[in-house]
Image: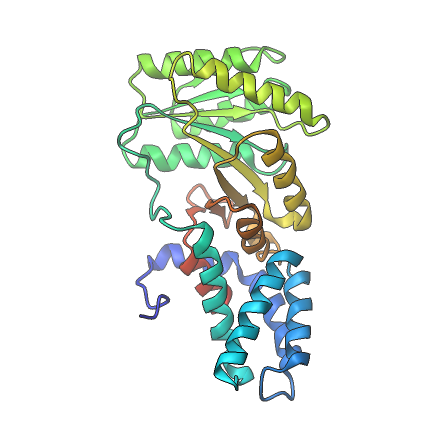
Length: 317
C-alpha cells in the first residue's frame, strides 16, 4: 500500500504545502545539484545527500540513520537511479518518523477517560508558546470542549497579558495572579477553577527560563506536585514548544527541557518563515518524543495536528 495515497483535507494540506515551501525549495535546489550528471545513487551522491540533510537541520545522528537506510536499499536493489531518490527519501523518512509518531492523533482530540485533561506547556520565551496555547484553546473550543487557561508564567507581566489577550479572543476563562506570584499557586487555583466549572481541558502556561536548569526543574516539579493535589494524575501531557526557525538551537532547547522535566509531546512552530523544516524530522527522531502539533502560519487555524505522511508528502512533493 502506498501510504502517500491518502486523502488529505485539501485546505489544511494547502496550508501545510505553503508553510513548508521555503524548506522544500532550499532542499531540492541542493539535491538537484547533488545528482546533476548522475544516473545512479553512488557514494558521491550519498556523501552529498548527507551534507544536504545536515545543512537542512535534520541533525547529524538522524542524517546518519537516513543514509544507512538508503545504503541498505542500494545494497538490496543493486541499482537505484537518481530519479528514484526522491521517492526513497519519502519512504525512509516516513518510516523513521513512524518509529516515534506511531498511533498519532488525526485531529485535535483528548482522551475521553480524562476529565479534566490537564496540559502543561513548557518552552523558552519567544518560541510561540503563548500563541500555541491560544490556538490550541481555539481548536478545542471548536470541538465543543470547555477550556480553562492558567497563566503560571508569572516571571513576566507580558506573558500574563498576552495569555489574557488570547483568552479574550478565544472566549475562554483564564486564571491569573500578579506578576511574581508563585507559579504553583496559579496552577493549583486553575485546576480548582477548572474542576468547579466542569472543564474538559485545562492548559497551564509555565515560565521559560533556561538560565538555571536546576531552578527550572525544581519549579516544574513543584507545579506538577501541587496540581496533583487537585487532579491526581495531572498533568496528562507536558507539551514542549520549539521554534523551528532556530534550527539547531531548537535541538539544544529540547535537550535542556527533556533533562529538566518529563516532556511527553512536542509542538514545532514558525515553520512557514524558514527553510529549516528538516528540524522536525531530527527532533522527533533524536528525542523519541512524538511531534503533536506544527505551526505553519500566523492565522488562528494555522496550528495543525502533525501527520507524518502529510508532512513528508509536502516536504518531498
